[in-house]
Length: 299
Image: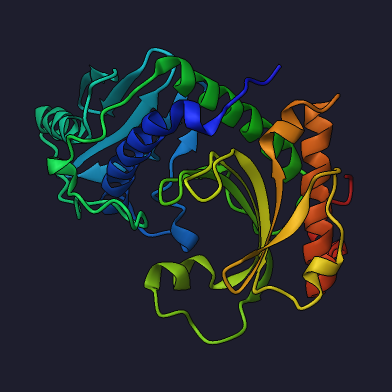
């Protein structure tokens, strides 16, 4: 049984956790080689939380994990024992940032980052000065993590059907969403976007799928999909299950279905897979993808 994840019940915690993840993600960005679509610096779901990939700085190999079962940050290095510190209510963004810097310094690792929020227009305070965000409700974090881990398992099952270029199931610390992307193999048409982050993210045709915990504009956890570049006929294809719909988003559309619709379904896994399959069908048919070439022969 999936837990209720009412946005208002954990919004202060969600914002604090999002900012912590941005700090870890920016360390990963500065300590790894660029991979297409920024896959090198996303956070990967593990059994107990999320973790960076293998990182390297100052001649040392290391990784960083946020453990949402024992509620701690763990820094592992190939040259030293693990170093940890506790995640708890009252730990501000500034204190988390300082604690992670201190932990890395114990391992003789220094990673300078652009230490302020990214892609969060209402939040501009540098990490080192942010003492406003300090909420951490371990019960709600565990609820979110249980939903995220379950979703990652379903996304992995869905991913196993695809034979083309496909991203890992990963947590993007930019938007705090768990996401998976499938690619046609064709470069994206149209003029390049001015933002270098967007330009790299959408350099190839993609159908994206994700799980997002919500924000002030959409205060509810939601599953989403979009196709980029968006084909003209995308929204003429119906999404499943009942309750899923296309919604205007910026200059295009995003398909959504509420987390509550999925979690309260008779078979939540089947309901989520139905949404993912209907989104893929809509994107591939409207964009003219070669589906046969991109499907495993035995599936």
